[in-house]
Length: 202
Image 1 (cartoon, rainbow, N blue to C red):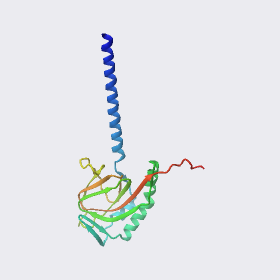
Image 2 (image 1 turned 180 degrees about the vertical axis):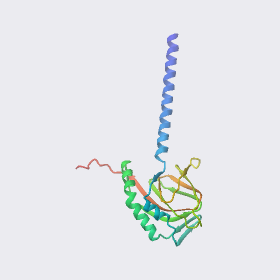
Image 3 (image 1 turned 60 degrees about the vertical axis):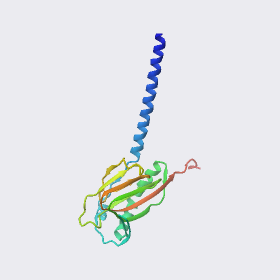
Image 4 (image 1 turned 90 degrees about the vertical axis):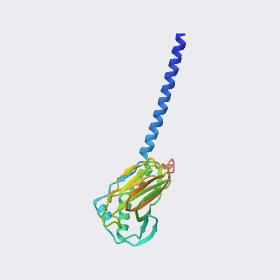
């Protein structure tokens, strides 16, 4: 009888240990997933920040609701060229380290958004380059949030939106502008799983 009770206790303890282990593993994987989907702040050089802070005379090209699209200026061309030289190599290197092969960057901008969202599509790395606003008479503090999953609005965090600092977000995430306007250039990189290098030395 004592042996029977002892066996039941042992089985009960083993089951609880297994349940705890499974729960811990699930929580760990969940935390890793959230951590990997966090935005990355790419520090800009002083000269890059100076370019981004310049107030420019812009030609309005298109208006889509709260989003205004402007024609790129010489300064915008300089900003994107400098970004390609200073930041793009690191983005590609990090992507390759994660087993991803990225495409050439697609440039969008300059744009200005009063309020709303901009999502990063699946298998896409999106980088925002904040600029001095065009429509505000003074540079106001904006409120921008980061949403790790574009389909889950209940999970958001405050995003430091600073002129001259670049913000990189992964695919299936988005930014939410609650208080604008914010002005920015935007660069996107599509990615695919990197090809196997088994025949590298052949």
